[in-house]
Amino acid sequence: MKKIIENQLSTLDGVITASYDVKSHIITCHYRVKEIALRVLLENSKKISGLEVTHIPEKGNNGDIRDILAAEVRKYKNRFVTSFIMLLPILVFMWAIPYTNPEFLTGN
Image 1: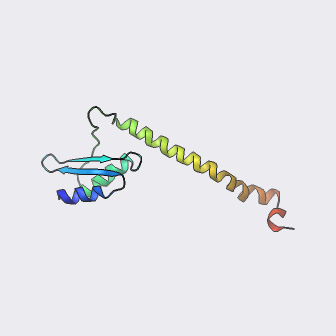
Image 2: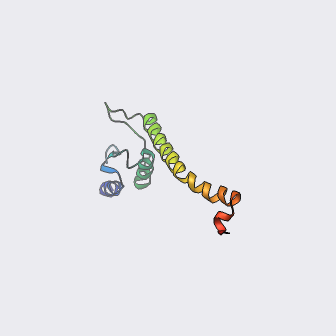
Image 3: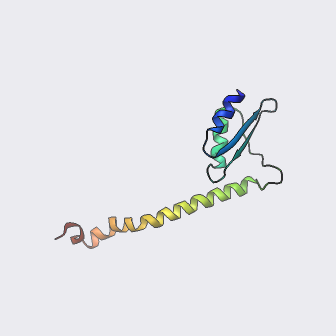
């Protein structure tokens, strides 16, 4: 069971190391925050192990879940705004120009 949990968690993108302590039923994961979200890691850990999973930050590390979740929300907000800005000209060409200038599409 220990090797199965460790191997499956280690195969996730962004997980550096994973270890499972059988006696205390604690999974310890070191991961890259920019590659895998904490929520995704917790959900996969729960699915793989079948145990109840919670986040316990390291001592001396700013691992407060509120800070981590705020950083994740900020990251996805930035991605959304960037993609919206990139798609805005396409939306203009798709919806505004055909109604305002139909000759642009037909060539007549």
